Length: 58
Picture (tube, rainbow, N blue to C red):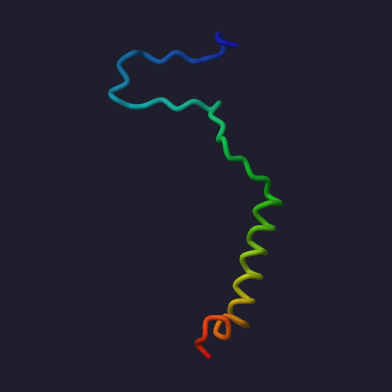
């Protein structure tokens, strides 16, 4: 697997090289994002409906 890598010359002009193999430690599935957005929308609607009463504004 080490033979598959491309070797760049040592004089890269100060540019950094990023590898395609980088994997984030936080991985979320698309379904989780959709559920999170739906939850935020529901919280927003409940706050518009009951928020002033709960906060003592109305």
